[in-house]
Length: 390
Ligand code: ZN
Image (cartoon, rainbow, N blue to C red; front, side, top):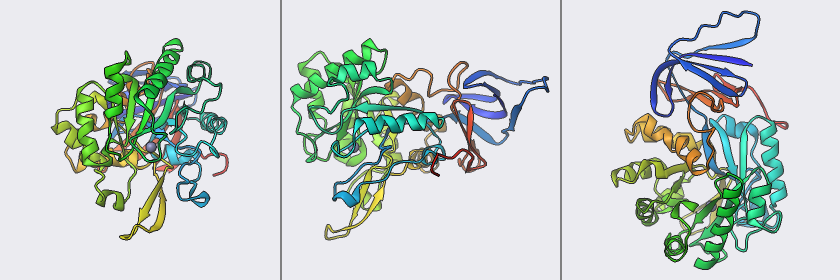
């Protein structure tokens, strides 16, 4: 399978200028000023990409691929994702997680869904565990899960500062981080601890306490939902300046924003203004989580579902509304999460890396085409590969 993308403005995410990019099989074979292929005998897909940016496929570090929610009873359990929910959003790599519900949602089901989406062309991973400690595992050990289950690259999302959490102690969190760290080291994976941050007053205190009282480095944790409130965002500034990674959630509702959630693109602008090191910041969609919408009296009026498309929409808003440079904004869904998750073949356009690519229209920043592992999934803003039941 050969694909030649010609005359695209390549953002690696660093700007590389106008280039031709040749994909062979599932890899980026070369990036040159001009590539001419004279062999007519083989099938080659040639894309004229003038007036387009070519950018790395997006990495979404938190998607509830089997569905999430259920916090308003069984009718509020959200549905599972379809392949095109991800591909049309430009997402070529995702990390799946359970959430509040680790009773009716299970790790075998989660892994099966990751395997299905892999078979359909994406690069997928997952976390062992769930919101609660002691962690639900597949093999009775976080370390063994990460070492022996290929799809598992860490543990989480472990909930802190939240009424739905298991109210974990500093010591419990340190033990979980130690188990994940060793599992990651022994299997050359991130062994990252994804942390769900609630709106409780402790904010990120527990993580600081683990770092102060143990040998666990701050980079072992990957706290998300940091834009949940201005207060948590400010705690995130301190945390990131101490060397920690922080993840912002792009899915939201009007009601959540009225209640004080900070729109992701605004939060990125704020973090840059506060001089937080850019490589510590990522976005994730929290796709297919439940997003309850309440009226003024706190009555549930509708239950929305986290939308994977918000991942790039917030990057686009960061560029268009906040005047953040495209390469800077792109890094939070490409190079940065690749680094946090130790996915060395992902997140950049570079010779030899996986051919996960997105073509964006220069004029509108709309997603035009998407390749996952060299396979064209979206063309002319339309999904051309569908999931089994789509
Ligand atoms: Zn969460």
